[in-house]
Image (cartoon, rainbow, N blue to C red; front, side, top):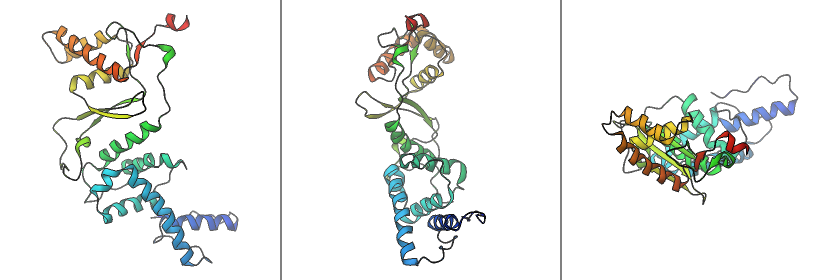
Length: 267
C-alpha cells in the first residue's frame, strides 16, 4: 500500500509534492492533494501511467501479448504504485521492473510460471543494445591461436540459462512446466550493432561458461576439461569439435581473440 512519508518538518510545497506523487502512483490508496480539482489530477494520472505502461509494453512485447488487458494493467499498476526506482533514466526502467518482479512482487495465482524468465529474456535485448562496454583490444590478439592461448569472451556476448524455453514462448506456446534440461542461449551484439540470439548445445554452453570464468587456461585445456567431465573415451574428438566451435564463435565476434601475455601488452 502506498503511504505518504511523514514530511511534517518539510516546507508546505515539499509536502504537497509528496502528496501529489503518492496520489499519481496509487490514486486509490493516497488521496489527491487539497486544492487541486480532480479534472486536472486525472490528466496527470493518465499521463504518467500511460507513459510508463506504454514503455513497458514496448520493452516486453511478448509478455504484453500473453496477458489480457486486465492482467497486464494490474501488473503494471502494481509496479507503478509499489516500486521505488533507483534511477530516473527511462532506459533503466525495464531493469527496475525486473527487480520488482524478482524481489518485491508477490506472484499472482494466474501468473504464467515463466513470467520472470520471459521478462528477463526480453530485457536482455534492450540492455545489450545500450551496453557501452567494448573488448579490451590492448590486451587481445585478434589472430591468436584459440587452442594454444586463452580465448576471451566479448563483454557484448552474454551466455544465459533458463528453466523454460523462453525463446520459443508466444501466444501459441506457453509451457506450464520447466523443461527437463535447462535452456542455454547466447545473446551477442555483432560488429554491425545487431543483436543475435542463438541456442547452445551443452558442450558450447559449458565451453563459454569456462571461458567466462577467465581462469587463464588455453582453449585446448578447457576442451580437455570438458572431455573429462563427459568421460569421453577420445578427448581428441572433443578438441577437434571444440576447435570448430571456437572458430565459429570467433567469426561471430563472440570470442574477439586471445589474451595477450603481460610481456606483449607492455611492449
